[in-house]
View 1 (cartoon, rainbow, N blue to C red):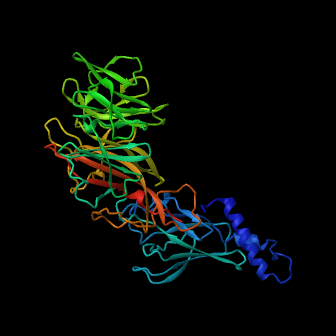
View 2: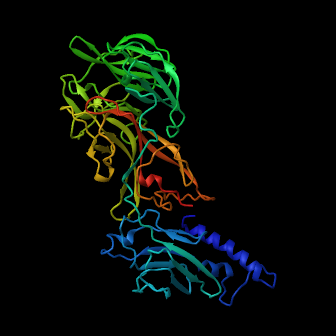
Length: 512
């Protein structure tokens, strides 16, 4: 339970009623004192109503602004938004408020820098407290000195750099079937992976959850020359182009039929429509399937090939309705771009004011989250964020930089060092990115994934401070993993691996 005035009074009344039922010998139901206050009121005076740390800029700027949760039901005081990695919490002075107690004592146990001791608290105290061992107890005595209540106090500090990406390597060294080409996309509520061998044969793996081991369960009969990288889905069917631009469709990925359309590039799906580009003479035109009857020439700076996958974003503060967006690609004159383009259901527009600083084709674009700390309050806000990774540069080299945009692609910046890929992930382009929430828990199985070495994650940390409280211990929870399938190196050869990663903060076990 999160501290609220009405809540802690009601809890105090309930607890006091139970205590007086045991101690009352007169059968009156409660005990009164000469003071005129009931025992319920006396017990409520043991409630801690406020807690924070005194300012100390040598420890941390705005230390006194850190928000602490007071859980009267379990007797716990803690900061759910943990202090930065490396913060020294061995010499801190608390501010404690109650509703009228007679005495507050602070019990210090198991400290490596202080002897076990008990300090009587006052608002003017200068004695600092070591919170690093986690053995600090506040004992509050009621106004009539008949009741006491104890609270464990914990000052949480990140044991790892919380917003770095942790990447885990898959169990197998290459994808099943020794493929030369791969394509992985979402279709309905499942993940489909198409794997094509050197002889042109193609197998399909269908997964309910990408954390599960990949198993090839079907064989696709592909039209000759079908470009595996062009496959897209509108959830009802798959669509793809062959090397001559002829469009094909399939309901299950195995049997394909011609649509009669010829395009030069597919962007992706906007709800039920497929979006792309047709070339007529020397000019390119935006097109849809089924044809919506419009014919608009592609803008000179809009890519006509090499774009990232098209993401369909539902309404947000940046747009009233669904927006389909892609990033990067090659424009008609052969140059590359790092800009983001958007489609609102009727027209295309470039939305980037600050594009990615190195123009590329074949980038991987996916939605995810980052976190931002308020300068004064130390409250952490979870922000919807677009990530763009990988890509091939104009000189043919392949990039492994990670870029982020917190405004739907209007402004891009290179992610900080902790969010860049670790050195053991190879540079790539044309990798397929999927974000999927998989169950994570203290007893969850790795399910065949080979995990790379990473810092230990403190299970008691959480970014959630919305007032909710679990009634039973949390052992499993949903964690949104980023999955990166395949990708080509600078020579065009497939990287036959799947990588997965997650921002550390999202793996922290929810508080109980």
